[in-house]
Length: 229
Image (cartoon, rainbow, N blue to C red; front, top):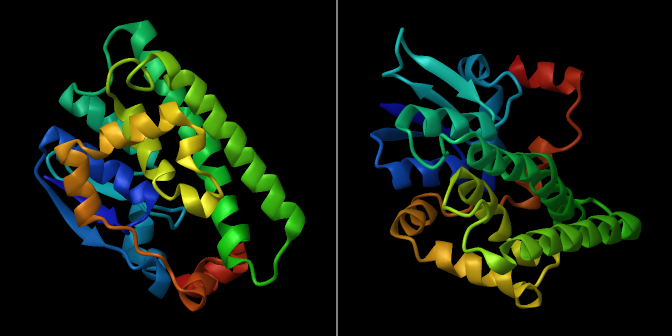
């Protein structure tokens, strides 16, 4: 059984989508990041970076296995089940490069766009323009990629599962899917998948209030230690 330590956010949804697609036996264990539960000692043994998601595979060979970082979790689950990550080298690394594109580019830039467009204590016009424009560039990269294929890495894979939840809040990133027809068509095609619909319903994104969001702001080593205590 896979225990998913979860908060309803794009990164949490990525792993939930895989669990639904693969039909794995799993349990959701909520982690309320607005209340600081990500700093609880028990959770930090799973995720030293105090971020969700994390998993504990209670059925792993050799005893329970703990993992954090959504990209690593997706790779592990794909290898465990033999699904959504091809065995052939070229196809496998095609999936991995787009998974890492999401982890390194799409997700972090979307997070910055969300912050400066919705949560920054004071408007910062340069930052709003910078991250909105970068998101527009990344949507263009994805749109070009999808122009001649149904899925990001040709066949449906963990790359699609990783990217889709970060496209869902496109309006908060200042993007209009009608400007990127191939992304729009791909997004709607995945949205209609029963497993994604189930995951989206179970993990409906919870938007934090400005007051709740302050828990996530201005973390330093010192403030993180204070939360842990």
